Length: 168
View 1 (cartoon, helix red, strand yellow):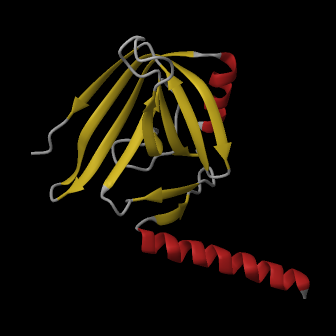
View 2 (view 1 turned 90 degrees about the vertical axis):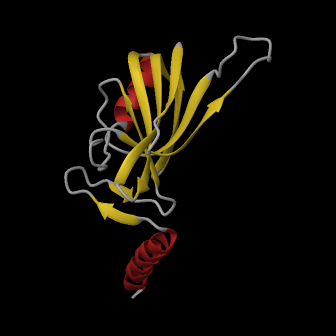
């Protein structure tokens, strides 16, 4: 009886997560090729992904399959203001995906990647359009901190370029 109650509680929790996820504007999907859970079409109309070197991620976004979906990102600055006039690192929060093992190994081995590209896209009347492209060169994975379905990845880089891509 106790096992049946435990199974029932797990099923109820999964249903509650799916319902609350739908209310928040995303849909949970189970991928058959690597049994990974992914989320699609955020309610705010934006999506973001990153491609780091030749590491293959689990994005399902049209035109960006093989990238890694990014939940959020920001620049991080350490040191004094008198230092070089740029951020020290880019910090990503992303879903654990097929790229995770390679990111962990790259971090441990201090593997160098020649490029990484982060692309923000916005949903509009004409479908999805690119809004912002962040290009990084001379990239290393400085840290990876995974926490169940999400992980925080810190990238260090030698050079960067920001491009706003107008939608109209």
